[in-house]
Length: 386
Ligand SMILES: Cc1ncc(COP(=O)(O)O)c(C=O)c1O
Image (cartoon, helix red, strand yellow):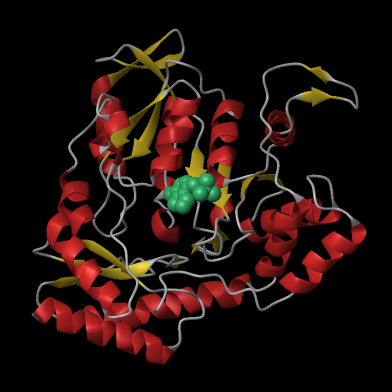
């Protein structure tokens, strides 16, 4: 079976894990945690990082840190993994959902600007969503599949409404936009995931990066049970969201090879996109760079869109591929179609709805060989032509 996305642990992982065992540092205190925080902050163009147990935990803590409260709304694109919406829900808030742009699959900034104009007003210094009467307390763009969202436009809107920006950059470490690494695009906080299928993994884990020392201190506090000093004084309800030294040891070894790992993902995207470019009925994933812009996606997942397909046809196609030895996946079902979020404020989802059920994610492990990728392409083309 050619797997979908497996890690490449052929660097210093073994050595660093052995160091964890021999030094007896396997829990949340240990030298690899702070080393990993510094390494990720540097790679993302930030001053600080706070390592977390998962990306979801990082998103939740980041939203709490910027002041999202029960009853609020947080702006979110609908085409995202459910964890982005769940993190908002854990605050007692709800997402206000938006469509995505066809070229990048990132939040539609025109729709965002327009709907904020039409559907909100400022009351007592707060941005109120008029139809629901609820406060909007943050904007959460997602750098979908590692393609930086249009942060210049988002930050401009955020400044206009005085809203904090927490970017879900789960798969975006290694992406750049006009020479700037993905954490340096103007978000107050950016959150990464290092789960098992990410370009670089810790087995599981996450990281919140940012530049504001007050916010970063607060995040450290929130993610470590809001404990004050060595005793058992806690000044608020915090979370046990810490990453442990074992996860961080793997993360350090992975991050040493981030350039190589991201280049492998970009090469895989390019090969699939070239292979499917001129085939009627198929459309490529977003290019890894926007036309005329120095913008580089980290290309976490790659694959193809089958234009005439629906959920049922894609399901059958994936079954056939599996039987022929190729693992593959459908893509995220948008949040506005998910049971727990049917009630939340919405917009027009023309793009989301026209693409999500047609997307096939194909094998894209960083170690995928050219021969295996050729085999995936030819088996896939055989199946869609039948
Ligand atoms: C867009 C997005 N947000 C959040 C997450 C959650 O990260 P984690 O699985 O580390 O909690 C993921 C994980 O795949 C993701 O893709």
